[in-house]
Amino acid sequence: MKKLLLTGFVPFLGLPINPTEEIVKTLDGKVIGEYEIVSRVLPVEFAESARQCLAHIDEIKPDVVISLGLAAGRTKVTPERIGINCRDGEVDNKGVQLQDSPIDDNGPAAYFSTLPIRKMVDILQESGYPAKISNSAGTYLCNNVMYATLHKIEQEKLNIRAGFIHIPASHELAVQKPQLPSWSLTDLQVSVVKMIESLD
Ligand code: PCA
Image (tube, rainbow, N blue to C red; front, side):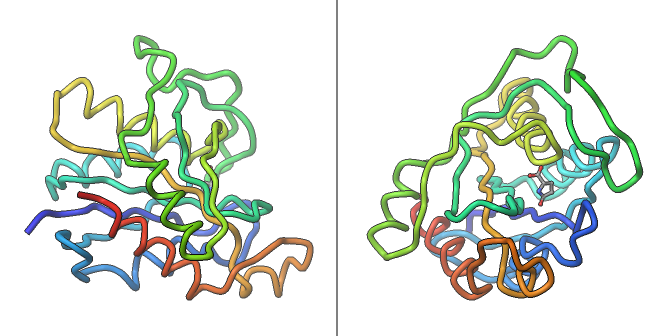
């Protein structure tokens, strides 16, 4: 059986919950298509998130890595096209704030996702779930994990497909932050399952 490392994040920036944490915990140990799901929850910390994700790859030796992050304010499920070599923006959960900071001083400017992002978007839309390819994962922890994962795979010539998918807020989050567009947790989870099913 092939293995799929599925990562989510803990809550951040004062938000009370992160639906990605709940989704990855629910799917942990399940078999979807040809893949056994192995889930891990990452901290929202510049010093730790990528380091832990790379350690999980070494431990689990997955065939595919899908990392999920919350993009509060987005209305659609958005597989990311690209991770860039930059950290910038809001403070992390440890109070660290970075500006214009490369993830790897010697790394390339960017990596493209190696997930079938067009197929994923098409399958979701055909099933009635709003989805769109995103051309920016931002410069916060999600981009950091995406870039670091693809950089490791490239440097170590690993036979692993990997990428990042941002999802909208859940209704449970919107109850507490009413300005946020939101989906039911069930729909978010089903959309993640459908994207996993789209893998060969
Ligand atoms: N979303 C943030 C970090 C953690 C998360 O779920 C991001 O988009 O960078």
